[in-house]
Length: 109
Image 1 (cartoon, one colour):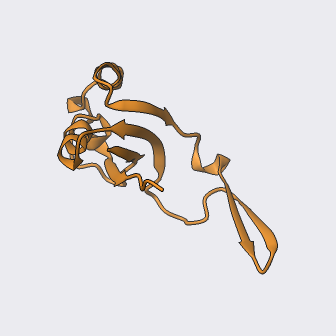
Image 2: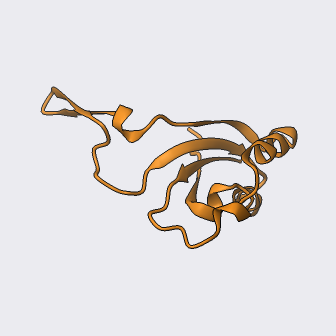
Image 3: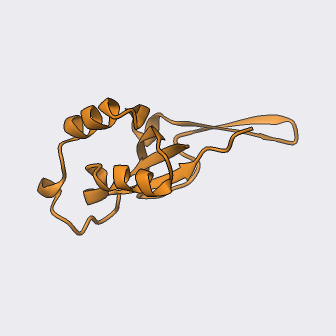
């Protein structure tokens, strides 16, 4: 099953960031096991463009549409047997220690 893992910042992490695992090691291990299909960091929110169409009119907004301190800073597309395996993959990601990870299954159409 495929899962999108959204990598998010946290406004006030309550853990020591030095305790987080190394990201390069996490990527190498997950790629080696075939659990990570792809992933990337994202540019700063100020580089975003929000696209909406209302009443047939194209509306563009520079930056994110929502003002928030927590932002999505990256993503990973995972291939896991089930949610339990996806959770194990996420719990070992460095951002689980200082941010948060959101897992969402992809919907097959």
